[in-house]
Image 1 (cartoon, rainbow, N blue to C red):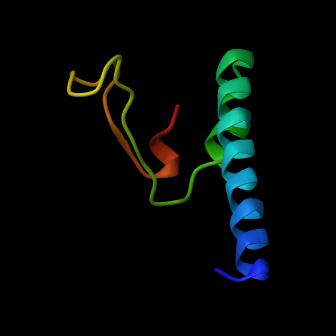
Image 2 (image 1 turned 90 degrees about the vertical axis):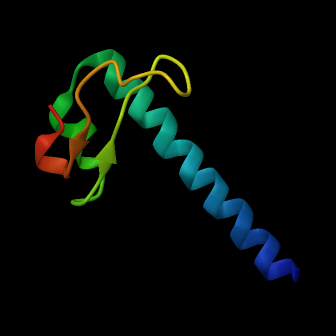
Image 3 (image 1 turned 180 degrees about the vertical axis):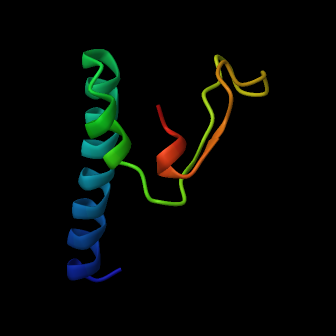
Length: 67
């Protein structure tokens, strides 16, 4: 991996982490409109209490379905 690739990988990872943190913060604050904007138009979302367990809320397909 070149130095430029390594730097880009670090930047990408930080951007992903920032989105995850923002999702968590908006989940706590209850701003659903801003929360939904963090997902792509064709997002598929499931919320599970544990891996392999059923979704705790109905799965959503598409940003418009995210409450």
